[in-house]
Picture: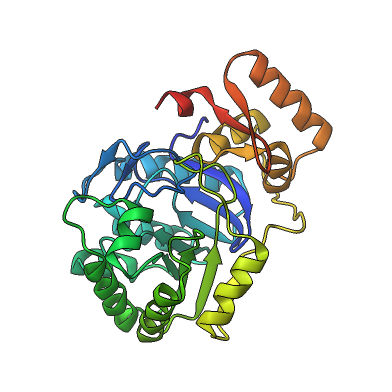
Length: 315
């Protein structure tokens, strides 16, 4: 079966073996972040809808879970903002009923957390990773380029309210873009907000793959260390790359796995070898074949050659 809305599993830097679920089509989101590895937002919206229907996702999950070992997590992420799908809670409830031993994570940009209905659906998850990159209007607009009228104050209030209600784990993610949200003033204000949210963990992230805006650069290790020092909290972690390979015990077609992965996130050859636990020589042969067929394209970036699907590029 060729999956359209689930992808992986991948060896996540944060979640172990994680099967991804993408509840929106490319590229529906409430933000158009300059660093997004999935590309420019083509449908900037706050409207919740069944962008991918429950029945379609259920069918793909049923097939995957029947033919493969259970992952550590099923993670809602992908092309856009998962909470925009009004069937999110229904899908999480189905997973919990079918495979109660699998943990559920939701990666969200936090823009809908001021909606009580969204918070109720997210309450079914084991882990929620909300993002908050900035607290000032200026940095928020520059980094996240939101849907018209969306205020960072409302996003902060939504995260605070959700944190007070949620029984599971909250890992707050912050993307650092040098010169935009790493000033002492911005970080001081951000620290106060973090204290009010009281997450279990704060994860500092930066650019790893090409973003929407080509000229932006990642923060260096020294810059991230400086941010961590200014925030001055024991719960802060600088996200590191996956350092080892773990067998994912799955029976998947490698070609489909590669295409599903790079459709959503451009990857280097080494990225693909790591996340798909693949033989390097086999990966080289497969990438050369797909490139010769015109199905993928290679682009040189600072960290190496990244592969993207042609369909991705055309969006």
